[in-house]
Length: 193
Ligand SMILES: CC(C)(COP(=O)(O)OP(=O)(O)OC[C@H]1O[C@@H](n2cnc3c(N)ncnc32)[C@H](O)[C@@H]1OP(=O)(O)O)[C@@H](O)C(=O)NCCC(=O)NCCS
Image (cartoon, rainbow, N blue to C red; front, side, top):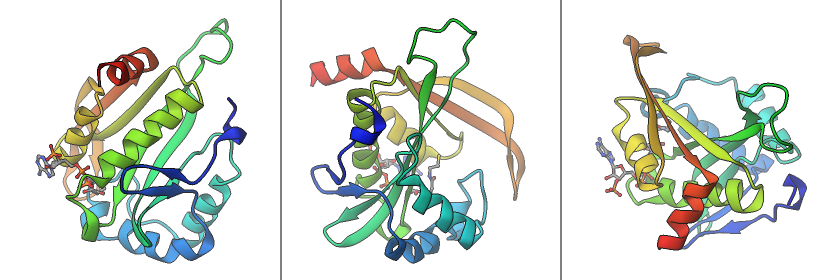
């Protein structure tokens, strides 16, 4: 399946996921620029115009499968799944060179209900079952325990604990984590369910 075959909206038990449209952006910007959210992100405050353009263009970008999540009519957060180049010398088998990079942001008003895990699990399914990617990674500050818990619940493996590898605008160089999961691990997890 190619990225243009992805069918939106996608549904989880409680959420509807779909690409962002213009009316979604104001709400997204509000929680994206909340200091409690910024605290945990690599990119701090975002320029509203750049943010809007990136999200609206994502809908037509075959390498960007980012989405907004709704519980009923209420926007609760957004998820990012970008297809990026993996490390590869010239002779990597066709289609295996790229990998997925996962991210998520919940509106703090709707955090604590398992929504980020539910949305991210669906994005992993998109990555592996729909796009057939080989590997998906995700990174976070080591002190972001909620994010690390999500990645663990998803069955992702801690592959790198980087000592003071991440710059934080308020506290300086701090530790960061990279998690990953392979397609065969995802399939085995699903089979074991
Ligand atoms: C991190 C974030 C996505 C969590 O969203 P959420 O919808 O509350 O996540 P979920 O409910 O699916 O799962 C969170 C898990 O972390 C746990 N958790 C929350 N805070 C925690 C903490 N301080 N320490 C340890 N575990 C914590 C929860 O109990 C839950 O685990 P459980 O299901 O085993 O109880 C949300 O708070 C957020 O958007 N934060 C700011 C942006 C961000 O950090 N994005 C990720 C950048 S890498």
